[in-house]
Amino acid sequence: MGYLRHRFAVIILSATAGILYSTLFTIPFLLISKYYASNTYGQTNTNGQIRGIGTDVAIVSSMVFLAQFCLSSTMGTFIHLANSTVMVTIVASILSICGAISATQFVEIVRITAQINSQICEKTPQYGECSTNSACGCFHMIGTHDDTGVCGFLWPTCSRLVRCNSSDNSCLQPNTICVQHPQCEDYPVCYPVTMIDQNMCPPVKNKINPKWKQNAITVAGGTRGGQQLNQLGFPLGIFIDEKTNIFIADDANHRIVEWKYNAKEGQIVAGGNGQGNRMDQLNFPQVVLVDQQNHAIIITDLGNRRVIQWLNQKQQILIDNIYCRGLAMDKYGFLYVSDVAKSEVRRWKMGEYNNEGIVVAGGNGQGDQLNQLDYPSFIFVDEDQSVYVSDRVNYRVMKWRKDAKEGTIVAGGNGQGENLNQLFYAEGVIVDDLGQIYVAESGNHRVMRWCEGKGEGEIVVGGNGIGDESNNLYGPADLSFDVEGNLYVVDSDNHRIQKFEIIL
Image (tube, rainbow, N blue to C red; front, side, top):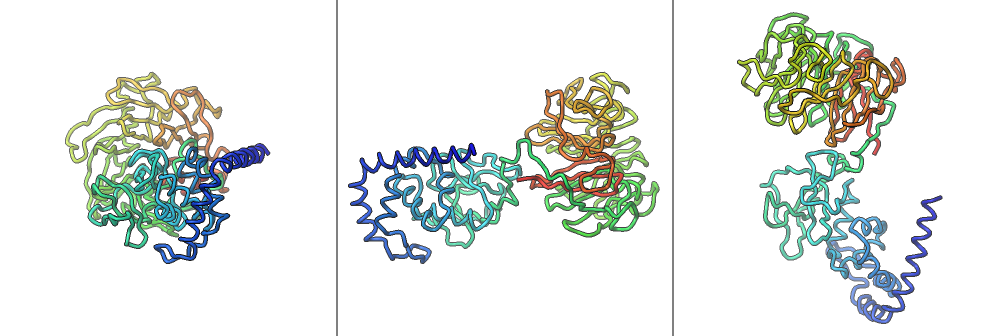
């Protein structure tokens, strides 16, 4: 009701403004509309479509509210108004006279945003953040004000982009739109519309405190525990690549399996030759990650006390004699490994493993002081090289900033329990671009979201007790997001991977 009252008030105010503007501008607008109508009605535009808006009533209506729109509206307002062919033409005429953008360009923007599921970014700098996908940014449109553009993928191949037509900034190539892309070309270029789809670049409005459907979809396993390719055995770690393929540390089956997007079964990509310590065997693998540069699969092989790499079915031991559990890689090419026996996390430069590495968290013996850890399990490294550690037996998550001598508690730390300020066996931990911390609790069978500095977290999925229904978790382990913001949870004791879809 409040919304309806607000809309009614807006209508009344608009009508009042319209009467005032009519008094001031009707005579000159009628003259303009007569000329406009006589010169445009029945003609075709550049797309060969008939202009059917050359009537006195339509033009006068658009002119009456011209000043109001020009003074108070943004590009997004105009696009929302353009919900029909008639309205597109009216709004395009207004915008053209306002000087905000040419009518042709506006019609093109509306056509593109309607043709594909794309979004407009307003008051955003060139390449500014506009999506939950950090690989997307805002590309300014030609002739727009208020830093307006379209949200698209930041890294197209520059050599494939063609310059826009210099006379009217149009694109002759089908399914392209003219944008600014100074990193590729000083002149406007024709950008493929397939790269501004919301499936690739989900809106940033969903980024703050996102919510997920509480009933998950099983995307791997789920047919009870077993050794078949459509089964899993107490899975632990998970890695999702840019194609939404899922790599799983299938712990009890001593193998790494890859489930292609929407596949009904997985394929073995490492191990799978029985439990053992041969180079082609694994012994309770814990966590897996894929180096996106060379597609090497890196595994914490806990039972064999080694970190091992598989590349094209060739194996190489990277780090030996380590009770390794957690594994992470930062953007600078450093590898981080948690050692549950030494209660520490160490860092190595990728490719340089003939040393003991550098302690970046813990390393002061087992304990619950701020400079200590007790069974560090999963880890996460952010853009600033801060290390987040699931300090499992201390029922907390610690954040160690780069070069820090002690950590800070960012989740839990109030003993074992199920209250919102407590954790019960913290496992998988990931941090989003806003610094929100997501923690899987194997003891409370839920996933929590925490914000640094706040004393309590909130349940995002699970927390409905032990069970195998779609809203249950049983001993959740690792976590991951895909590019669309969907949340994946390793539901370990249910032998499955659950996908919780983001609510847009």
